Amino acid sequence: MSELLRRVFSVIIALAVAWGIIAIVDVFAAQIHPLPAGVDPTDLESLKGALEAGAIPMAALILIASGWLLGAYVGGRISFGMGRDDGAVWVFAVIFTLGVYSNLAALPHPGWMWITGLAGCPLFALAAGRQSVQVPRPPVR
Image 1 (cartoon, rainbow, N blue to C red):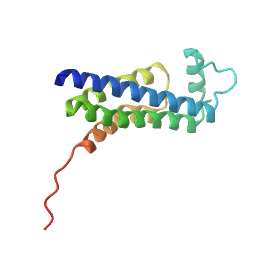
Image 2 (cartoon, rainbow, N blue to C red):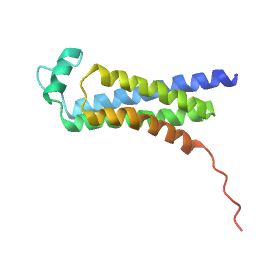
Image 3 (tube, rainbow, N blue to C red):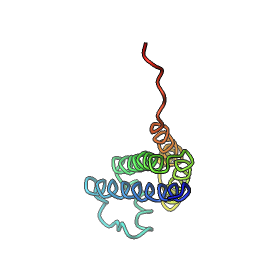
Image 4 (cartoon, rainbow, N blue to C red):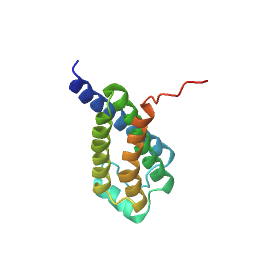
C-alpha cells in the first residue's frame, strides 16, 4: 500500500473510531442523565430550547465534552499509529475539530464547551500523536 493511501485510511479509521466513541459517550450520558420531559433528541429546535433554558444537567454536558476529548485522543493515536506520520495526525485533528465545531454551531452550547471543543480537541489529538513517537534514550552507563 502506498504511503499516501495508508495515511488517508488512517485518518478515515481514526475519524470513524473517534465519532463512535462520542456516540457511545453520548448514549451513556443520556442513560445517566435523561433529557427533561418533552425534549425530543431528534428535534433540533427542542434541543436548542432545552440548552437555552439550562434544562440539560451540567454533568451530562461534562460527559459530552469528555467524549469529544477522548475521541480526539484515541483518534490521534490511531491516525499516527496507522499513518506513521505527523501529517496524518494534523489532518485528523483539523477534520475532527471542524466536526466538533459544526456540533457547537448547531446548538447553543455554553462557552466552556466551545473552549473545550475548539482548543482541547486539537491539543488532545496532537498530544496523542506526539506520545506515539519513540524518543531515543541515551545509553545507560
